[in-house]
Length: 156
Image (cartoon, rainbow, N blue to C red; front, side):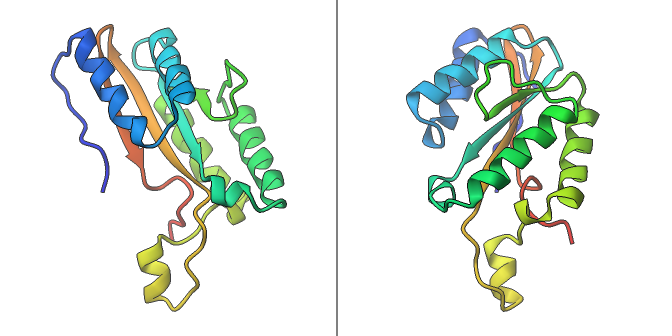
C-alpha cells in the first residue's frame, strides 16, 4: 500500500537507494530535483513531492485545477523553492497536514475515492490526478519517506 518507513541510521548510499526507489514514479530529471530538495532540506523539515498524472494533465481543464492546488500549497506554508510545481518544502509537518486537509475542503474536485471504493460505491473510476510523497530528512544522512494515500483521496 505504501512505502516502508525506516528509523535506523543510514549511510549516504542508503539514502540514495531510498530516493532511487521513487524512480519508478519520477523521470530522471525530476528525480534529480527531488534529491536536490532532500539535500537542501533542514533536519525534520517535510517535503511534499507530487507526481502529476500525465493522463490527467492531458485533459485541458485540469491545468486550472493543478494551478489551484499549487497556489493552495504555496499560500498554506509550502515553498516551491525550485519553482518546479511539484516539490514543496514545509517548516513543520503539521503545516503540511493542515494544508492537505484544508485543500480537500476548498478544492474538492482535487480529491476522489480510491478506485476500489469507487467501484464498490458504483461510481466511475476517475483518472487519478496525482500521487503525493512526503519526505522527511530525519538526520544528516537519513531520510524517512512515505506515499501519502490521503492526498487527493476523499476522507469520507
